[in-house]
Image (cartoon, rainbow, N blue to C red; front, side, top):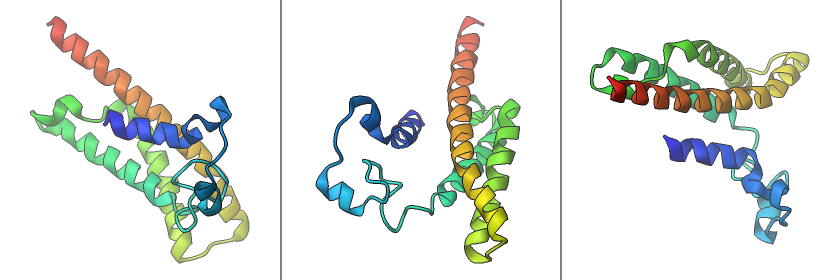
Length: 143
C-alpha cells in the first residue's frame, strides 16, 4: 500500500522535477504531453486518468467492507473517510460517463477542472488512511 501511495505522490510532483530542477530526458519529452517526467501524461494515457481515480475510489470502497472481516479489519479503510470516497467515486463516474456519452461542454470543463481537486483528495485520504492505521496499530500494541 505504501509503495502505491509513494508512486502516486511522486507522479503528482513529476518525480521531483520542479523541486530539483532537472531537465526532462529527450525520450520522455517526445512522448509526454506536458513535457514532464510522468507516466500519466504519456500520449494515449494522458486524459484517461479518470479510470485510475475511479479505481482508487472503488478500491477504497472494497477497503470499507474489510471492516466486517475479522482478519482483514486491521488494514480496512476507516469509515470516517467514506465521504472522501463518495466524492472521488461520484466525480470519477461522471468523468468516465462523459468519455462514452459526451455531455454539455461547460459541464465537461467543470468536471475536468475537478480532476486536480480529486487527485488532491485522493492524496489527502491516503495520508489520513496511513496516519489512522499507524494510530490504530499503536493503540492495539498498548492494550
